[in-house]
Amino acid sequence: MLGAAPPERRLAASLLRGGGLVAFPTETVYGLGAAARDEVAIRRLFAVKGRPADNPVIVHIAHADDLLSVAAVVPPLARDLAARFWPGPLTLVLDARDDVPTVTTGGLTTVGVRVPDHPLALALLREAAIPVAAPSANRSGRPSPTTAAHVVADLGEDVDAVLDGGPSGLGVESTVVDARGTVPVVLREGMVTREDLASVVGAVASRESDRASPGTRYRHYAPRCRVEIAAAGGAWAHAAALAAAGRRVGLVAAPGDRAVAALAAAGDPLAVALGSGAARWLGEPADAADLARLLYRCLRAAEDQDVEVVVVEAVPDEGIGRAVMDRLRRAAASS
Ligand code: TXA
Ligand code: MG
Image (cartoon, rainbow, N blue to C red):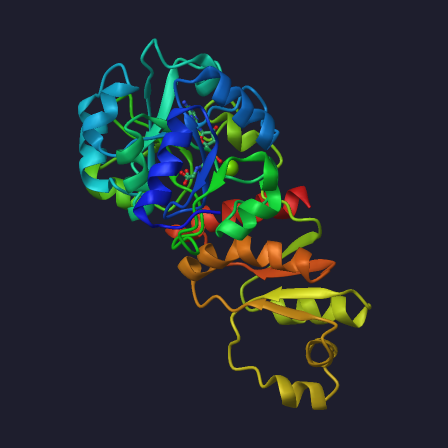
C-alpha cells in the first residue's frame, strides 16, 4: 500500500510504465491501472479482475490535450464535453487510434477515455506520462471499491501496488457517452447527469444496450448477500418484516424522525433487532448523492457483518438518482 508522497507516486508511475498493475483512487471509485498500450499488462489486468475479454476498459489521461494519444479524431462534440466536464466523471467513447491494442478496446474500434478529477490520479498520470487503462479495481461482478482497503480485500497480492487516497468522494462510476456524432449518446448512466449534458449540448440520446456498452450486460455490483430495494419511505416496514421472520437484516435508509428507542420499547421487531445487534443500520443517506457515496461501501459492510438481506431505500430516478438506482437494481438482480 502506497500513500500520496511524491516518492511513492514516482514508484507507482514507474511500475505502470514497466507493465505493472497499480490501483489508484479516482473521484468516482478506485481504478486498477495498467499501461493502455501494453498488451501483456492488459491481459494480466483482465485475468486478475476475472473480466470478460469483450468488455473494454476506460483509458485515463492527464489532460484533454492528450486525447489524440488514443483517439483517432476528436469531433467538436467531444471537445465541448471535455472542455465542460474534465477533469470529471465523464467517459467519452471515440474512434480509437490503430495502435490502441484490441485487448484494451475489447475488440471494438472505439476507445473510452476520461480525465479523472482526483489530485493523486492526475499526479500519477502526469508522472507516468502514458495513457493508463483502468477499470474499477474490484473482482469482476463485485461492488466497485471506494477505499484502498476494498481493493486489497478483492485483489490483494495480485496487484503490484495500491495507492491510498482515502475514500472516493462520489462513489458511483463515470457516465459513459458515445461522443462520435453530433448528439451525446449515453451508454452508461453515471455521475454526470443527462441534465448536465443537455445544459451544454441541448439534446441527449441513450442507447443502453448490450452491444453499445458491453459492461452493462454482465452480473454486477453484487455482494455475498441478498439486496432488496424498498420504495421511498417503505424501508423500515420492509426490514421490520424480515427481522420479524428471523432474518439478519442490514438497513440503508434515511433515519427520518424515527424514535428507535421508543419503537423498541413498543416491541417493533426491527428496532429490537437493531438494539440487540441482530440487525445493522449500515448507512443513513440523506439524498441521492449521499447514497451514491455510500452504496458500495454499505454492500461490502453488509458482508463483513454477516448480514443476510440488505434493504436499501430507493431514491427518485432522476439526476444522479438515475445512476444510483441503475447500480442498485443491478446489485439486487445479481444477488
Ligand atoms: O468512474 C469510472 O468510470 C471508473 C474509474 C476507475 O474511472 N471506471 C470504471 O471502469 O467504471 P469499468 O471498467 O468498471 O467500466 C467501464 C464501462 C464498462 O461498462 C465498459 O463496457 C464501458 O465502460 N466502455 C469502455 N470502453 C467502451 C467503449 N469503447 N465502448 C462502449 N463502452 C465502453
Ligand atoms: Mg466496473
